[in-house]
Length: 106
Image (cartoon, rainbow, N blue to C red; front, side, top):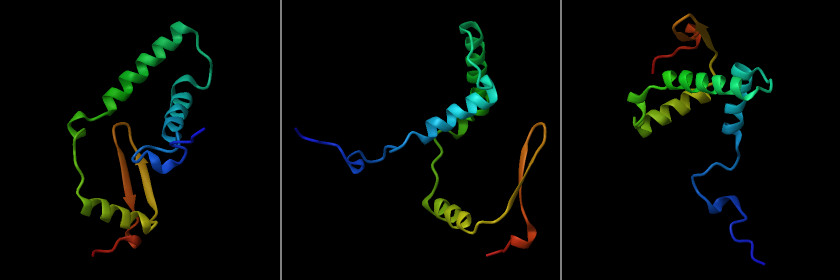
């Protein structure tokens, strides 16, 4: 009996966990089904509303945007600084603030 493909490194560039799928499932349960089992007719209505909502939120013009390596590097370095970010939501937008005491011009 052979065990071809038993180790994670065999398949490069694929996820080794299903965490992103489970995160999506959690959003659906928390926001849409409220963790209740639904009859088929109600499930269909909820499923269609989820598709509509997620289709509106997606911005097709950004679909094929490529990010430069320097931008990835700068973003990663900034994230490592562990700065406090404040999130403010209004009816039509979300704004993120960085405290002025943490801001340095480089």
